[in-house]
Image 1 (cartoon, helix red, strand yellow):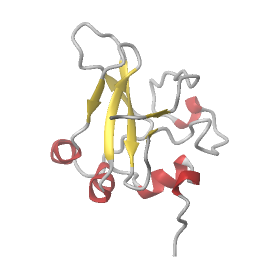
Image 2 (cartoon, one colour):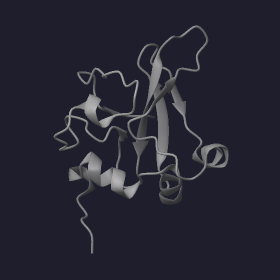
Image 3 (tube, one colour):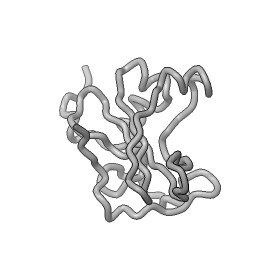
Length: 126
Protein backbone atom coordinates (compact mmCIF):
# COMPACT_ATOMS: atom_id res chain seq x y z
CA UNK A 1 0.00 0.00 0.00
CA UNK A 2 1.36 3.45 -0.86
CA UNK A 3 0.99 6.94 0.48
CA UNK A 4 -2.14 8.81 -0.57
CA UNK A 5 -1.51 12.41 0.47
CA UNK A 6 -0.15 13.41 -2.92
CA UNK A 7 -0.08 17.11 -2.01
CA UNK A 8 2.66 16.32 0.51
CA UNK A 9 4.88 14.35 -1.85
CA UNK A 10 8.32 15.83 -2.49
CA UNK A 11 9.92 16.30 -5.90
CA UNK A 12 11.96 13.16 -5.21
CA UNK A 13 8.74 11.17 -4.74
CA UNK A 14 7.29 12.47 -8.00
CA UNK A 15 10.56 11.84 -9.84
CA UNK A 16 10.53 8.24 -8.60
CA UNK A 17 6.95 7.89 -9.87
CA UNK A 18 7.56 9.62 -13.22
CA UNK A 19 11.28 9.70 -13.85
CA UNK A 20 11.16 9.09 -17.61
CA UNK A 21 8.87 10.34 -20.35
CA UNK A 22 7.61 6.78 -20.87
CA UNK A 23 6.59 6.52 -17.20
CA UNK A 24 4.92 9.94 -17.43
CA UNK A 25 3.09 8.94 -20.60
CA UNK A 26 1.84 5.66 -19.13
CA UNK A 27 0.62 7.38 -15.96
CA UNK A 28 -1.19 10.14 -17.87
CA UNK A 29 0.94 13.13 -16.88
CA UNK A 30 0.30 16.51 -18.49
CA UNK A 31 3.60 18.27 -19.32
CA UNK A 32 4.09 21.88 -20.41
CA UNK A 33 7.14 23.98 -21.21
CA UNK A 34 7.19 27.59 -19.96
CA UNK A 35 9.67 30.19 -21.20
CA UNK A 36 11.22 32.29 -18.46
CA UNK A 37 11.79 35.26 -20.79
CA UNK A 38 8.57 35.63 -22.81
CA UNK A 39 6.19 33.48 -20.67
CA UNK A 40 5.21 31.32 -23.64
CA UNK A 41 3.42 28.15 -22.47
CA UNK A 42 3.62 25.12 -24.78
CA UNK A 43 2.08 21.69 -24.34
CA UNK A 44 4.58 18.82 -24.58
CA UNK A 45 3.48 15.81 -26.62
CA UNK A 46 4.91 12.84 -24.70
CA UNK A 47 3.93 10.33 -27.40
CA UNK A 48 5.95 12.26 -29.97
CA UNK A 49 8.92 12.60 -27.61
CA UNK A 50 8.98 8.85 -26.93
CA UNK A 51 9.10 8.16 -30.69
CA UNK A 52 11.68 10.89 -31.31
CA UNK A 53 14.06 10.50 -28.33
CA UNK A 54 13.30 7.10 -26.85
CA UNK A 55 11.44 6.08 -23.68
CA UNK A 56 14.34 6.65 -21.26
CA UNK A 57 14.54 10.44 -21.75
CA UNK A 58 13.98 12.43 -18.57
CA UNK A 59 12.68 16.01 -18.46
CA UNK A 60 13.72 16.44 -14.82
CA UNK A 61 16.37 19.17 -14.32
CA UNK A 62 16.28 19.97 -18.05
CA UNK A 63 15.94 23.20 -20.01
CA UNK A 64 15.46 23.78 -23.73
CA UNK A 65 15.57 26.72 -26.11
CA UNK A 66 12.34 28.71 -26.46
CA UNK A 67 10.53 28.12 -29.78
CA UNK A 68 9.13 31.66 -30.13
CA UNK A 69 10.71 33.68 -32.93
CA UNK A 70 13.40 36.13 -31.72
CA UNK A 71 13.16 34.94 -28.10
CA UNK A 72 16.51 34.13 -26.54
CA UNK A 73 15.01 32.54 -23.43
CA UNK A 74 14.94 28.96 -22.24
CA UNK A 75 11.95 26.89 -21.21
CA UNK A 76 11.50 25.00 -17.95
CA UNK A 77 9.36 21.86 -17.91
CA UNK A 78 6.34 21.50 -15.61
CA UNK A 79 4.44 18.25 -15.07
CA UNK A 80 1.03 17.46 -13.65
CA UNK A 81 0.37 13.93 -12.47
CA UNK A 82 -3.27 12.84 -12.52
CA UNK A 83 -3.36 13.02 -8.71
CA UNK A 84 -2.58 16.76 -8.52
CA UNK A 85 -4.49 19.90 -9.49
CA UNK A 86 -1.43 22.03 -10.36
CA UNK A 87 1.64 21.55 -12.50
CA UNK A 88 4.89 21.21 -10.54
CA UNK A 89 8.29 22.31 -11.79
CA UNK A 90 10.38 19.32 -12.85
CA UNK A 91 13.39 20.13 -10.69
CA UNK A 92 14.32 17.41 -8.24
CA UNK A 93 15.92 19.84 -5.78
CA UNK A 94 13.39 22.71 -5.91
CA UNK A 95 13.48 24.65 -2.61
CA UNK A 96 9.78 24.20 -1.76
CA UNK A 97 9.45 20.65 -3.08
CA UNK A 98 12.62 18.62 -2.56
CA UNK A 99 14.75 17.84 0.43
CA UNK A 100 18.02 17.48 -1.47
CA UNK A 101 21.11 18.70 0.38
CA UNK A 102 23.09 19.23 -2.84
CA UNK A 103 23.11 22.68 -4.40
CA UNK A 104 21.39 22.98 -7.81
CA UNK A 105 24.71 23.40 -9.61
CA UNK A 106 26.11 20.20 -8.07
CA UNK A 107 23.15 18.01 -9.06
CA UNK A 108 22.45 19.33 -12.55
CA UNK A 109 23.83 18.62 -15.98
CA UNK A 110 26.87 20.50 -17.41
CA UNK A 111 26.06 23.99 -18.62
CA UNK A 112 23.34 24.45 -16.01
CA UNK A 113 22.32 28.02 -15.21
CA UNK A 114 20.75 28.62 -11.80
CA UNK A 115 17.05 29.37 -12.04
CA UNK A 116 15.32 32.24 -10.25
CA UNK A 117 13.15 30.35 -7.78
CA UNK A 118 11.56 33.51 -6.43
CA UNK A 119 8.89 33.06 -9.10
CA UNK A 120 6.07 30.68 -8.26
CA UNK A 121 7.09 27.05 -8.64
CA UNK A 122 3.54 25.99 -9.42
CA UNK A 123 1.43 27.22 -12.31
CA UNK A 124 -2.26 26.78 -12.92
CA UNK A 125 -3.47 26.24 -16.45
CA UNK A 126 -7.03 26.69 -17.67
